[in-house]
Length: 349
Ligand SMILES: Cc1cc2nc3c(=O)[nH]c(=O)nc-3n(C[C@H](O)[C@H](O)[C@H](O)COP(=O)(O)OP(=O)(O)OC[C@H]3O[C@@H](n4cnc5c(N)ncnc54)[C@H](O)[C@@H]3O)c2cc1C
Image (cartoon, rainbow, N blue to C red; front, side, top):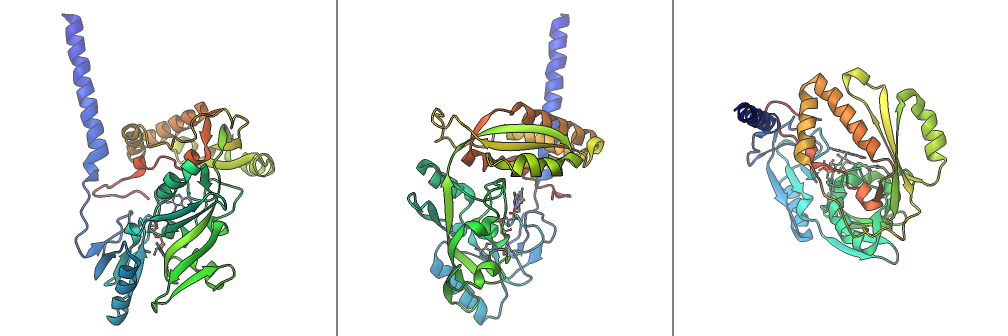
């Protein structure tokens, strides 16, 4: 009798927990939908009335949309995945060129280690094409969800600490200027545009396609360490920068109340001596346990104890990864789905 009651209690507890989790994760995710003529970015802080959105998968369509806007005297903005938060990708009563359908990986050159890609493609699109060739992107953000055009326009940086920021890895790109002219830009041709457009937030024209340098994919060993924030500067200079075998690096600083901006942990990605034996270069990892990580991140958004819990769990998770092996391509596609948040009455920056 008693065990059966106990079992029922546990079952009820489980059901209550599942319902609570569900409410926590999804209740605030009832996103107010964008109406046809209103647009926003992932922050959803500045919904703005626009004239129209143009999705172009063909160059001709993009050129025509720009020409039409010019004739009608309408302002034009350019949008990738709209993860730059602050309204960079739209303008009141303007035309938004949504580049996300202009997303072909046009060619991969394994000999010269380059990729030619349209600007609406994401890093994920590139990784899928170059991984079978044993190649890898030189510089990109930690996440692979962004468009190439959006990444070039902010001159992104990432975990690779040896190849600078994205601009260093660009050979050339084609630019559609506001007057309709298409030019090729490199360090030698129309060179003045090179540093203006890369990091130029779309102000100098539409990046159509680009050739990026690649490097070899390789096996890396993860090395994790905890430290106080004031030890970090010396640690980075001495133990990271000076050690050429550290190929990539990541440092996370606590935002949990108990250890706020004090506690941190670092991950170094070192070249491994097990390259030849590693059987799994073909495998590109995908997001895992999203429900759990999203749930924990949800708790950390809403409660201080949740922040402390999330930080401690994050730290111990990465601690356990000490010594793990991971390919460069997999290091450069870290989990992102759990970060997505569409709260009805709040946002997550
Ligand atoms: C979770 C998260 C993690 C991040 N991690 C990093 C990181 O590790 N390193 C880092 O450097 N940054 C990081 N960022 C910032 C990120 O790199 C930028 O927000 C980037 O712009 C996002 O790309 P997007 O495709 O969303 O661009 P969008 O937000 O769509 O556009 C950004 C800018 O580029 C312009 N643009 C877009 N496409 C084109 C085009 N084809 N031609 C010309 N202009 C264009 C837009 O007009 C806009 O001004 C991160 C952001 C988030 C949300």
